[in-house]
Image (cartoon, rainbow, N blue to C red):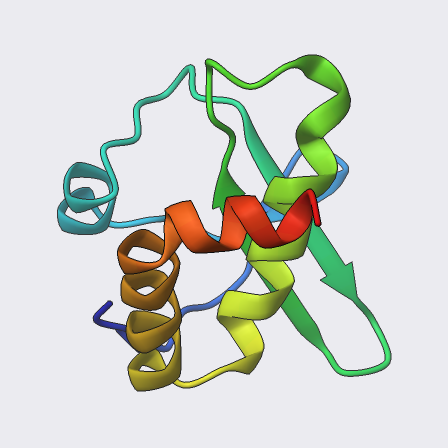
Length: 100
């Protein structure tokens, strides 16, 4: 998973503030104006993470997207790629272990 780093400024929108997402990012992330996303704010660290919610996920599983948003902001792209590949490759064994 490739990460991009980009400096941006906050903009004032009414009584709130916003950061814009450029068109290339929105297209690559397969987002649109109406997508539901999870945003995790960590004020003490000064970080904000965003994850696209899966439309096929039940309402009570939003926590999964929140966890992903936090994790993607904290781990290296190499580790994330390895972990994603490991989970796919060993899905059957991990499923059996979860019921052992």
